[in-house]
Length: 331
Image (cartoon, rainbow, N blue to C red):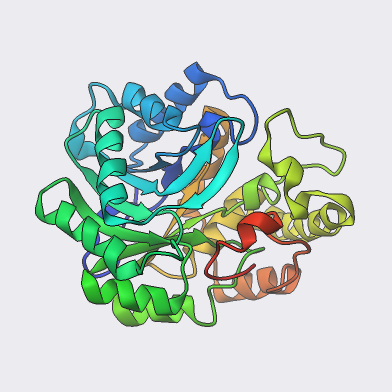
């Protein structure tokens, strides 16, 4: 497995990371045994960066990872954990909490569920509009100094917030959606990260499966699948977006790879400071994704991909309206 370093102060990780959200019901019911087998397969293949959040099925995901990681040397993998979302039974959403006392409470729960003494990268999932980012990052800085956290990350914030947070403590990486269909970070956020020496962990590189090459217009999301409410998966939007996938498939065929591999490779090709996170929840999807690190895209390839799926070509927001308002940047 190739490696990449997240910014000037961040850790060296595998060139591709595993996002575990889908293993806890975000896309419908998942198979626990297959999920654990997928984590094992990723580790065996050299994947070291594992991404989760304390609110993925309200602790379920952390407990799942703890089970999958049992017996593995702690220094053989890195845990990236998001915190802060408030939710109640029945998927009630109450916003985000970035208060210092809450930050430290969230971490205590995560350490217990994950069965570990420290988190490698700890990050607020979103900006709490009622709490200055300096206070939230300052609380994590306290946890770094106490040895409970190794690095501080951010998620889904704008360039101004990145600068303010970085002034309190060096930020290792920003986690944000970045794919051929979601490129809002390119004008301002990405240049800011590079100016400050901050890495990028890109989630949604396959647009939640929309550009994986496996989604079809007549596919009906299973019960509990959040994509049923995704604007890009509904109505005329999905027809338009899948036409972009068809154009991408022609490029992939010429490169001798799958659409998914091409889409992941495109993200990786945008800079050595970017680590794509793949949300594989089965070994089959994982084994398809991993060879993307070996797909070499030339300047001509990148130009052809840009022509097939130009920036801004997607239709529909990347989240339902209630969640779009929590993002630092748009589509």
